[in-house]
Length: 543
Length: 51
Image (cartoon, rainbow over all chains, first blue to last red; front, side):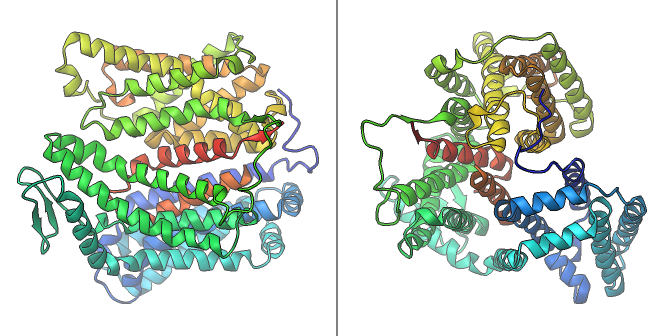
């Protein structure tokens, strides 16, 4: 393992960056605990400051999280060198333990006040103290880990970025909370469009505009206000705006701005297609697929297709793109270095999304993920033949350690074990065996290979350099380790903490000798032990 | 890549804000996978280089 730091051209910040990461984790844990504990619905209908907390409390929390994410991202992108130098300076000071103690004292006070505020006798005075203790705890926590001089320098270095971020977050929160006023209009329009789409395929459409129910004599749905398509419009507008800001040098303005209303209108219309398709699936006899898998996945499938379409249009359409006409001459070879590292993982995700959309309570089509990954791995086999597949004894040992950690943390997150899904238990022995074989094979072979190639082989090194294949697989970096592990953890749902720790351990196994084979062997060992636990001890919730 | 990471972070931020209520059409439980799929596809799409 090379302890060569994050970049040879930048000063190392020995402790400041780690402290920032610890601070982010501390705040995240506290926010999650508060969110799970307190229910703003109990304050709805109140007046004064209590009513303000009830109406806007959750939005303020989301806004603060969004502000931190957006501000830190753009601050780092635009002012990397001066911020790295400031972090280096901040790393020389120590953690202010008295301030950290004060932070925890205020968190305790916040908890006590929460019992009063969310109890039977809330008052404006308690609400004011509650807000003050919360804000004070944030300020003290931030000042305890990183000296206030760094925060001041960060604000000064980034100019008016804080103002633009604040305005963007305020707009998002107000628009998000106010969009409910558009729900009746959007629901009515979606209802009408879905009915028009349905009419050519079904005789005797059942439609009740007053209750917004639509369907057939056999299968009917109610178009709830939340299903009116406005969330999809919000997501595609946010994606499109971000794309146009980040890749503004590639776009022709003002033509490129046309993509925003076009994308919003198209995704709104596609929501009606989704509802019509859902009714047709239900009418065909697959009610559970319509209500369960298709209902939950179709929205994301449409958003992903729209976002990819937006990015292709913004890059390939000469009317809106400056780079569209600059295609490579036939004599110049074109390569795609990330493809071999990422496509297996992308194929598993895409197959999983389609597979879930096609099934109801039980994912019978899970083997699609196995076949998709196997096909892509076979396609890139020549590239993989050049990698180091040797395995050290420590790799399986690390896999066992991750398994032990996973099971230990599972006790806290999933205390009630689940037995075999009823649909699988009721299947014929042959069908059950084939499904289980595919599930185990995917977990032990294709998933570890695809995830290690993507997270440790690609993402870890790509964070360090655009030419990621030139980065040694033994080069250590706190930033790359933290970012790649946390993103890996996010993909494991409620097991995010175990996932993050697992990602970090697999990365350390890779860094020890620089062999991708070690990381894959460790990951495969963990997944094999989990499969044994699921099958032998009926712990089906682990899958 | 920094831009892609920024895009994903913003996507997560905006997504969490947009999902203020439990919106059935955009299932929050599938959000991380969907955003990872989108980010991966964009990286591959923009990854072509001339040698």
